[in-house]
Image 1 (spheres, rainbow, N blue to C red):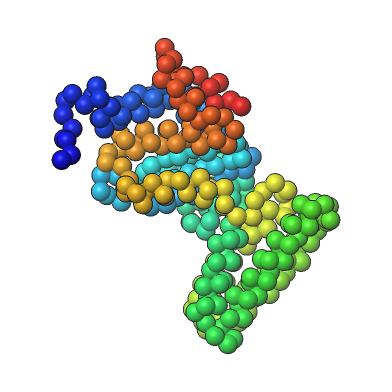
Image 2: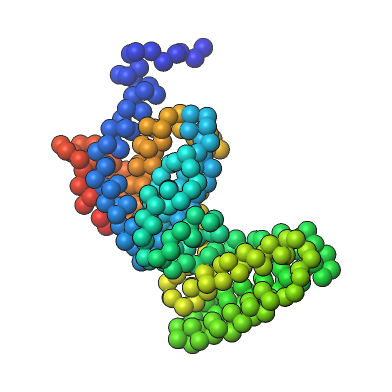
Length: 284
């Protein structure tokens, strides 16, 4: 018979003991967490994303913003612009690699790269749901995007100079404009796809203009993946206090992994620090 958790469990490693220890470590890591969030807000390229979550049984959102060396997390009740402001600041002026979620477009001082993987999946879904001429638009869009990715691959392989690739971007844009100028598209899914591409036109080929900019938001999706596995196991957080503790600890652990550090070591050092731990603990 399973024993209940009683007052003496604080000395036996019960759930409440673990929760208090995690909260204490997160409190000690506030300096590290704040420094990492400041780094992301000034990064040259950042990739944000979000996924559904639960806190106390109610709907919430887990957000992330990732660079090549730093990842931060936030849990919030909203999926709106306010969280984008909290993560990056609406005055962020770097390059944002993101999906088509509208609040990211509120970063008006930034340059944008929309995720081509999302667009290619959308094309595949339209082809699966269509037949005959209904497949023409998604086929043409997919071919255009694959040609853009092939240019990137040739640049990365050293076959084409970055300047040569940049000069070919207008050719791709003319092909896109020809699609956008097609008269009355009857298929509703194809019509919505072209409308979306018109909205995203300026964000389609930033990865060809600027070497080092990803063509997809894979970095943020990889950052979210471990949390999604946890969500499938235990659903989310019981309280908002616990949610904020989780966000801080995930930020330190994920960033440590990116920097090839033992992620647990900074947490242990933070727990033993006489005051709040120094951001130096997470430096490679």
